[in-house]
Each structure stands twice: as C-alpha cells, then as structure tokens.
Length: 344
Image (tube, rainbow, N blue to C red; front, side):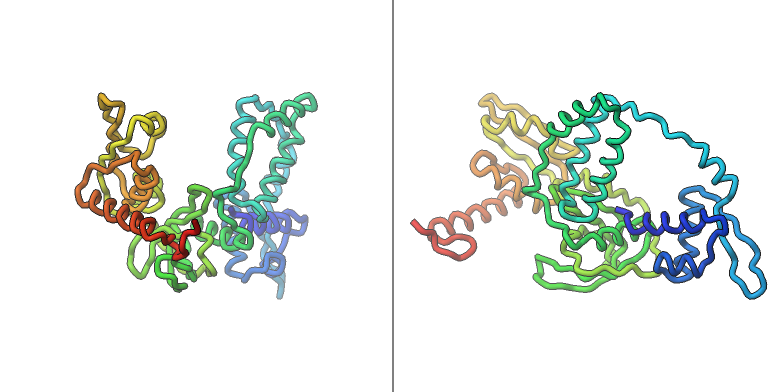
C-alpha cells in the first residue's frame, strides 16, 4: 500500500549511504520531488525508521551534504539474517493471508506480493519445498466477487500515503446514488477491505461528516499540503464492527424469525458484535441484532426470501413489506426490474 513512499525512502537511503553522501538537489532529482518534500523524506527516515542522518557544513558556495551515520552503517553490516524455521501452521497462516491478494489481481501490487513470497521461498530448506507446494495447493483463490483495481494503483498508493501523513485530499468521485461525478475535499481516515472491495472511511470537510467511499469510484485524487487532525473519540474499527455491512448510520435493533431450515446456517456465524439467538419449539430461531446500516440489513433479510421474517421494529417491517410488494408486482406484470419482458 505504501509502494510509492517506500520506493522514495529506499532511493533516498541509497543516496545517503554513498561514501560522499548526497545533497538536497540530488534527492530532488532522484526522487522527483521538490525541496520541501526532500526534507520531509529525510525527516521520515529519522523519525519513523530511527536511522540517524549526519550532515556536513556546506563549503563556500556549495550545498550541505547529508549521509547516513557511519556507526549505524557499521552496525548494519554486522547483522546476520536468521534461518526462517517456519512451522507448518505458520505456513498455512501465511498462505491463507496471501489469498486476499486477489483484491489486487492484475495490478503492480499483486506483482509485488508475488515477489515478496518468492523471496521468502528462498529461506525454506530444500526438503521443505515439497511440503510447500502442497500448502500452496490447499488454497483456492477465487476473484468472482472481487473488484477490478487495474489502473487504480496510483490512487491506492496516494490514498494510503495521505492516511499515514494525515493529509487532506481533493477527489473526483462517481456517486452511484446520484449518478454524478463531484469534486470535494476529504480527510482520509482508514482503508479497509470488505467483500472483495477496497473502501476508505473519510471525513468530508464540507459536511463535517464521516462517509465511506469505494476506492474504484475515485476518478482522481490530489494530496494537498493541508494537514488534518484525527477526529477525537473516533475509532473506525469499532464503528465497522458495529455496522452490519460497510454503511454505518443510525443504530437499529431488529428481530428476525428464521425457519428451521436456515437456523443452523444462522447459528454458525457471528453477524454483528451485539446479537442474541432465541430457540423456538418448532425449530425456528429469533435473531436479534443491534447494529447500524439498515440498508445492508434490509438487503440481507430479503435475500432469504420466505425463510426470514422481520418481526420488529414495526416501521422497518412495513418498509420490507413495501419492497416485497414492489418486487412481486414486477413478476406479476411479467417485467424484469431492468425493464425487459420475460421471455417464456
């Protein structure tokens, strides 16, 4: 996610590690940045990676030269890479996580993930290679529901950099609800993956409200020089955990009756953080959810058809009934939702 930033840091460290060090002008030319950004890279190396950087007093008419602390370079050369004695369980965990790389299928990010695992393979003992191939074969990665991020690599990287540096961004965003492309400023707070897609939680400065944006619908993104303060008492992890899907709005408590056929399926999952299940004598269950994101909850209930019945609250039950009635009228009239007549 930080590919651009990491590349700049690696290139900068390469220049700084030279015996003669480097200058701000050389950093600007190599990294393709301005002087202010070059100084920021030096600060990032020292503050985030704890690498000491020294500098010489400039000669008459010359520039200040920056270089890595010589003692740091000496200690670095003495570091030995330990053997990676990974257990079978650790390998399973690694390749299970790697399965999520399907989100970046066809992008440079996927290529970097593959290279990283290729380098990891070098450390495995030769006798372990056969077991490794068996482990790889265990995991089937399907991209059926994943979104296509080809061509969006720069936006993903810049968005990640803006989150880390707390920088306000100007975006052009395609909203499906309005059908329009609009331009506005955002304070990006969090990146997260959900159901094969990449999303970002942002504060929209114009409304001073938290919103969720789908990354693939961001047409352009420009990082500004304006820094923002992270909202107080805002914990995106807790909010997302409380939300039923990716939409978090006013809290809602619902009671849903599931038939006996669906009961085992409902029991085996945790649908939200606050839930209760009540068993009935006829084999049905009553699931109570205290969550947010009514739109996602409603879609989920409707997906079960007659196997699920929303009992409470009354206003939401009426809304579900209206949705079912609209759907039924489409089928009675022989018209698909897209407006085409059903061929018999």
